[in-house]
Image (cartoon, rainbow, N blue to C red; front, top):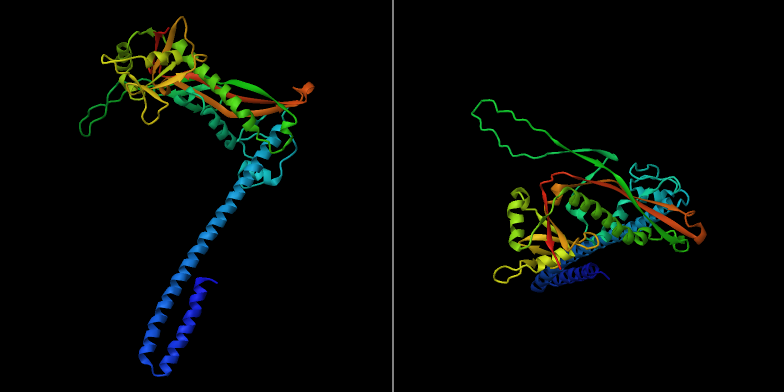
Amino acid sequence: MKKSDELKQAITAKQTEMERLQSEGKTQEALNAADQLTGLINEHKLALRSEQADFELFKANATALSAGSRQESDAVLRNRAFNKLVFNRGTLTAEERRAYYNDGSSTTVSPALMETTSMKGGVLVPPEHITTLREYRKAYTALKDYCHVVTANATTGSYPTLGEESGTLTNFSELTAIKKSAFEFGQVNYSISDYGDIIQLSNQLIADANVDLIGIIGQRFARKSVNTENAAILTLLTTNLTATTITSYKQLMKALNVDLDPVYFSSARIYTNQDGFNWLATLEDENKRPLTTPDITEPDTYRFRGKEIVVLSNSILATTAGKAPIFIGNMADYVMFFERSGIEVAVSTEYLFDSYGTAIRAIERFGVAADDTNAMKAYLVAVS
């Protein structure tokens, strides 16, 4: 029995008792019973409010559970729909289309997604799976994260930039004309290239319609994707910048304080390979204090005089003739990274006909171009 029902019964009994005492002329006892009746009535009101609050909380939890179940169901439907499109296994059901295209309709197709046969094209990886790929990418050092990323609308084109500006505003008197100055936008030309990978899977593995396709191919594709992007960005750095050899921490300090324009200093980082990082880690001042120290907020991140050090593998950024490369500056000002159309996945069962397998092809499209070439400086350090 609910608390409010118990109190309601007690109120009825107390009211009967009060009326009986009053009829018997026992005024004082009747007054005491009336006071008790008032207390019971107030308790009843509190009990009703408490039970109403509990009911509202129950409804909210029930709604949340229902929404959670629906969300989980939609996730399963989106994965199933994605697999159907990739493997060309029939048309989507109304529920699969609603969940996959997420437009509240079973008939409207989002223009951002392609629904084609595997032999003629591919399927763009939906945002939900792109998030999974990004999580895989976090395990690797991706230089793209430090660049100025732009979505390209064509395979080739140009992008306007501000260019250099060292002028000043015009000082003018009240109601006098402001001096006009010339200004021209810079242009960065870009070209998009296609990069891909083919992953071989057994047909037994993908027999399940709900197979986590992105989970299977994601880690391998993410690593190769990061390596490819890094190689393109590093090629842009090494071919456009002339490296200067430095031998001491004082020369490195001069590179930061003098060689690099102050406009880039606040957001500057140091990019190097494992050998270069080892050289930085051995640097000490006159009092034998190390100049490369861990970031107290991010122990896995190291800094030289406050500047973050981004370390790449020697296999990606090589040491040549006993000298390790070091780049200093603002990568976002130097490199524009143009990406197009996200990631496309296509499938072929004929490619692995003799091994009863299926080939999954994953493709991304991007290009890199130099913007402000003064934003980065290149150096070499001798390493043993």
